[in-house]
Amino acid sequence: MKKRLYNFIFFKLMGWKMIGTIDKNIKKCIIIVIPHTSNLDFLIALLIRGILDVEINFVGKKELFSFPFGYYFRAVGGAPLDRSGGKNNVDATAEVFEKHEIFRLALSPEGTRKKVAELKTGFYYIALKAKVPIISVAFDFNKKEVRISNPITVSGNYNEDMKLILPHFKDVKGKNPEKGFSVN
Image (cartoon, rainbow, N blue to C red; front, side):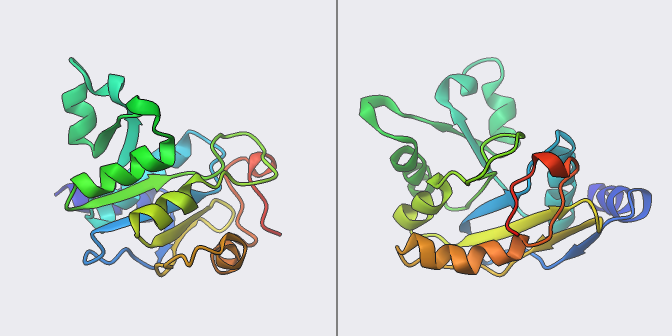
C-alpha cells in the first residue's frame, strides 16, 4: 500500500521519472546524492527509498540515538556513529558497516546545501576502508528525474575513480542550481 502511494506521489503528482535502480543483492554500499541544494531533496530521497523498497541508511552522532529519539532514528535506518577513542569519521563509519548485515549508507559529498567548489572525500575513503561499492544518485530538478548509476568499486586511486563517478552528475541541476556542485 505504501509503495503504491509513493509511486503515485512521485510519478503522477510530482511528474518525476526514475532511471536505474539499486540491486537488492547489493547489501552494503555508499550511495552518494548530488546535488544537495534544498530540503526538498530529503522528500525525494524518502519517496525513492519507498519506491525501490530497499533499506537505505544514514549515520549520526551516537548522542542522537539515546532516549527518546533513538528508537525512531534506528527505525528509519539510522545508525549511531561512535567516535570515541580518537576515531575519525571514516574509521567510525567503516566500523558501522562491519556491524550490520545490510547497510546502504546515503550521504551528500557536498556536505551542505550551499555552493561548494569541491566535494568532501570522506565517502570515497569510507567505501575504500569498508570495501563497499559506490552508487551515484543524481536529483535533476530541471529534467524531473532521479538517475541511479551502476555500482563502482573504488581502486584506491581517488582521481582516477572520480573520472568514473563524476560524469554521472554532468548537467544535473538541483532545486536551487546556483547552490549546487557543478561537474561541468
